[in-house]
Image 1: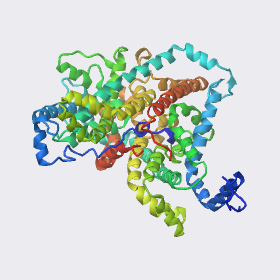
Image 2: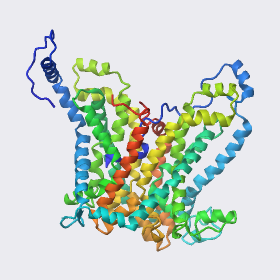
Image 3: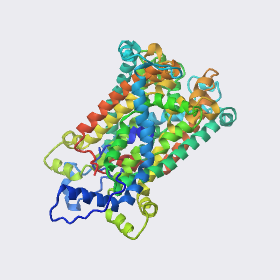
Image 4: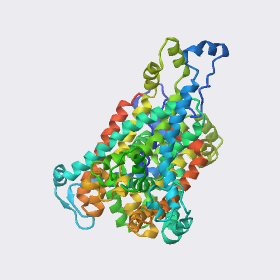
Length: 320
Length: 319
């Protein structure tokens, strides 16, 4: 349900002011002379020794963080037997690229990717349009009781999906939608409250006079939205869009409730089921290969949009 | 909203209540077109709210008082589901497990604050470190759960192999009632570290440097500067993370279902949501599951209410 998706990214104004994380200690550079004065105090100078030690600690931590993922990739390239070799092989010998062919040929990973894409793309694209329209109306248009509507929508964030899943399941089974992608699309496509909240806050920084002027010029509200408001909020929309896409792509609880037939399942359910099915055959390379495949698209999205994602997480809800 | 209002004269030498009402009506007429568009723009999420939130909610409340398998008739049984719940040791065990998992929250926050402090310094490769620590956050939970399930394997798992390096003979984590919960906590801390690190990093870097300079002038050492400046300044983030982690943690399901599909050895890993799901979709005990789901919803509501209350100062305003 859209109304309570990715709770983790909602901030209720927790960050008073979140800067771009790339800022170094150089901002507000003090004049040279002053720096000299402060040198002894150590307030603006960093000790290279401390930084060196920290780099070592951070590197060790990075190894711990990366090891399981490297292990996943490594396992996916091993033979079935090499998985159980002791001491463990970090570098597969021999490399078995064939696993990735098998993943696509023998399993439902490909249809899983297709289904996940159908759900994630339709939901986020259409849902983003609905959310930005609602945010525009809530922030910049006149309607008696609109604040009540906004609070009403916000209240939805407080209801966790597990509380609603049983009645929603019954509703969709009455409609005959179980084992189709519709229950994953329809409730969520109508808009995402977190996105509405975030865009509404963002729009508060846009002067009302801009909209008023366009109205006087005789532009329709639809036109004002598309030609003026949407381009203005595009950076915020992009950031929220990516976060939402990642959330839908990675969702697991709703898909396992609704999808039974293997060819209709989304990628996360497919690999979870493979985990059960192939573990008995001890085919860990295949399971790990599918897991690698499920992580890669999101990883690419992240690496490409790293800056926007980090900013939007740091800024979510911070415009108070 | 107000549709057809007669035009009203608003000569306001005496501004009576009737005049105000009339003026509002005149306004309503003036803005009628705008009202219509605004309503249309808000329609989709509002419809979604009514159909997929309000209606299921009302239905849930009713269903929780019935004996119902999801297909057949619903028999009204009053509070029986709730009294059963109070006596159901599995419910209490699942609740206990869910709360137990939250030990990971303070551990994760402490680690991520330390990380953020380190990464806010001019350290070579900061972007690289940030990315490495963040990758688990964006990886799909299903894949991560499978990966860790294999990593926790008693004989061939990565974790025990790493422990063997320092001479520790690790347990068969997920098959051992004592170690299954800690195993899941370790995994969730690993997974969530990057996210809180990023929020802390933003907060730490937003602290005005002049505060540190002034403190240094007054002779404050770095521990003092941390406890008197940094910690209070990042408090809103800490608070936010604690609350969202509690809410998120109360809904833990994927890890449990994938890593321990039977609820773990002697039900030691089953979470509340897992138990609700199991009762509803495996045992088809929908009425009972609904009652438990509502209890979960109320618990989450209480946490959220506390958040809004305590955080009122920093909170958004609706205008």
